[in-house]
Length: 57
Image (cartoon, rainbow, N blue to C red; front, top):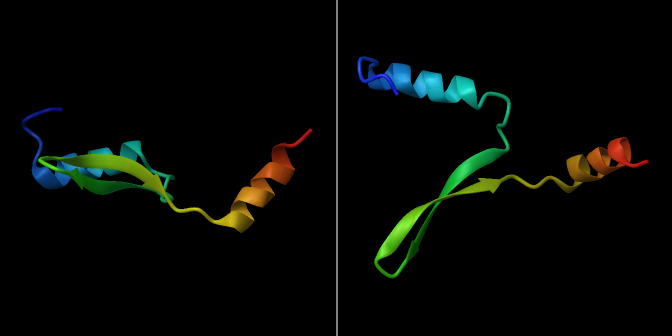
């Protein structure tokens, strides 16, 4: 990442790269002395079933 970008510009760049995936987000985890982030998603059973019907052969 370009160091000359401001924090706001870096955030806008990051958001533009991942635009369109509002169902994906980061979830923080902790286990003992370790911690981090992992991808998580919003599960909507109706959208999932509609997706299955659309792509089923």
